[in-house]
Length: 429
Image (cartoon, rainbow, N blue to C red; front, side):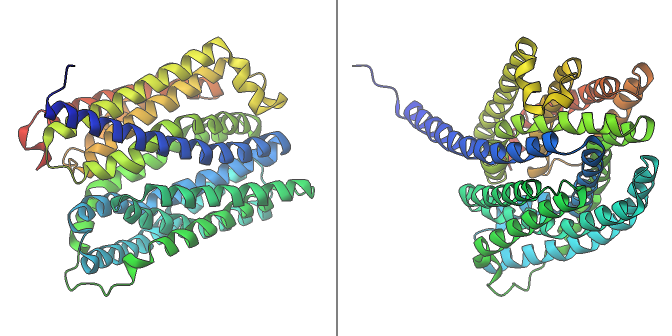
């Protein structure tokens, strides 16, 4: 009987172990995203289009504040924590330094974004009381979202992805129960339903805080990491500001140039992004933290190739099914959105390419390859300028095409950047 050499047996065993872990993480993420999808589809089907458009803008502001409050801090915690996570006192100090800086960035983010969203609500004809309430809730919800993000880094670095996902699942279930209960009572108001989302975010932060208590209880060491974290923020904050624009530009343009109907249509299509969350989950929870600790460049290359190859394959499968049976996806959104067949494939293609670019970018930042991060902004801006020049921006299809065109230069650059870094023998140093 033929027997593989020991080195190949070890590689196969490692591959099987990672396949098993990835399957578990992906399966749990499917459950998390499934609950979130049920909640989102429930809102889409039950809310009036104008109320759902206002809700979509509030969610856009919350996502914007989250990115501005992070500013590269979670990346810094992952990269630095990959070196010090086994030293309880030093790791505790790292988390404390990260939270303090996040608070300062959060306040700056509110000052930067609130006037813009207030003006956008005014352009859509939103009642002032509704605008004030939704903006205030978004500002309130940013704090627990940011706390959960930073503390989840500790769970991932200590290979506790399952605990992190259980916290996400609890928050998703709380949101489903709260929003479902409000709709059952006949409260389809955007303020009430967005408040339910914020309460679910608080439950998520509470559970993550309990799970990471052992990492915050030890007395902090005398060695601080404020300067190193600041270095990451300086290198990445411009990119985070751009990510705010990049992730929300379609919603902002539609709100500015079209109206409530189109904002609701785009918001409904964006809910389908949960399909790609399951594909990206193993990288976020397993691969990226492990890559921060790897010292063997050959292992680093293999894991990157597997992650990117799986992302391309998953995106291709989703797009094939959408082109073959678009009705399956549109049925989920309900009768009010049954006319979005032409826009469906565009939305899924844009989301899929965004996921792949995100995986490559995640590898770059956890490895500290951020010296040319400004090219991300330059290439994306060139892509958006090209897309805006050739596409109509007052329709959902036009904005989605612009997003798709704009994502291609960035994807090409991050793939090339990762390839060149992985080709250098010292890449894992």
